Image 1: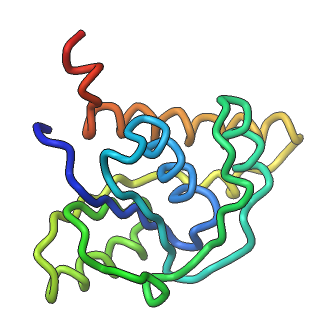
Image 2 (image 1 turned 90 degrees about the vertical axis):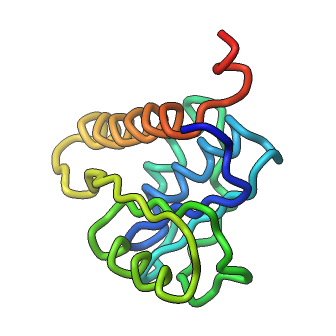
Length: 147
């Protein structure tokens, strides 16, 4: 814990669900006090269920454009949080040339849930809520720290 890093990168497999959710949550909690971005190993279309469950809590990620590590404009991050095993391997590779902290937060892939729309949305909500909990614990805001 401690100081808020100046730059945080969230990464997952496709930059279509987990890492955009984490980026949106972090941005809402910390605004412009820290730079935040997200990437994937590969890219896929932004998942509409991810957009829907983030919209439920007032975060609009609908304009997020999935991108890969290779598309990063800058790779100088203080902390890289990987949310899938594939992304973790890539994040560790980055630390060979960059001095940054890498954390692995294994995060369930909600696309693995089958069934009704409601059942699938619930899986996405669980991922969103777990990411929010972990971000609040790892990157507490100054307001929260005073409470």
